[in-house]
Length: 294
DNA sequence: AACTCTCACAACCGCGAACAG
DNA sequence: ACTGTTCGCGGTTGTGAGAGT
Image (cartoon, rainbow, N blue to C red; front, side, top):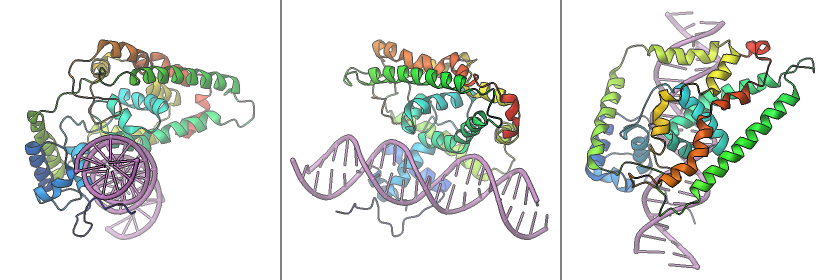
C-alpha cells in the first residue's frame, strides 16, 4: 500500500524560511517542547510541512548550534569519524558538539570529499612508473589505517553493546523548558543575517579561498590529519559524551556518565585524538611534485 | 557591464525504523 | 502479529552569491 504523505501538499509553503516563520516555530517549541511535529503546522498556523518544521528546528533554531567555519580540529574529527563510521552523519554529529548532521554532511560533500579525493589522486599520480610514491609505503599506510580502524570499531562496538539500561554514554542535558530560551539567540542571529549587508568575515573568506589557492600539499596533510592542539579543543575530550543532536550513540537523559563506559570508549577517543593520525598520510613522499593539484 | 560558471548551503524527498493502537 | 502513523536519517536538489571571462 502507498505511503501516506507527511502533509497535505496543497497549500504547503516551500523554500527559505522567513524570520516571522522562525519566530512562530520557536515560540511554539518554547511552549510545547520539540516533538509531535505533525501537530506543529496546524497549531502554529505555519503553512509548512511537519518535516520541514522539524528540520528547521533541529538544524537552525535549536539552542546550542554553532554556525560558521569549521575549525581544524572539527575537520579532523569528521575525517576520522567518516573513515570509521561511514556516512553516518547523525552519529558523527554526536561527537561534534554544536554541529548538526546536516551541517557536517554539507561540509563533507562540499569541502572534505573533494579535498581527500584531490590528495588521493595526487598520491596515485605516477607519471614515470617509478614514483617515490611507492606501492610499498602506500600499502603500509593502508594496513595501518585498516588496523586502527578495526581497533576503533572494536572499541565502538564494545561500548555500544553495553546494556542500554545501564549505559549513560551521554551526559546530554535533560530537556528543560528554560533551555529553549537560548533559541532567541539563534533567532537574533538569523534576523541579523537577514538584514546583513556587510561582506563576509575575514575568516570565512580565508577558509573558502584556501581550497582554491592552497599550494602546500604537505601542509595540507598536516592541517588535515595532525592533532597538535588537543587542549584547544577541550570540549571534545571534556565534553566527549555531550551530544548535540539525536544520535544512535546517545541514550540520553542522564547527567551522570558511567565511568566504565567512558573507559571502554577511551580507545576510540584516543584514536580520534591521536597525534599519530597524521602519520598515515605523511608516508607519501611526493608532495612537492603535486603542488599543481591545488 | 553583462554573462556564465562554480561553490556553498538550506531545504526537500524518499526510505526505513520505531512506535502506537 | 499486523497495520497505519510519525520521526529521523541520508541522498539529492535548488538557489543565491561570488568569481571568472
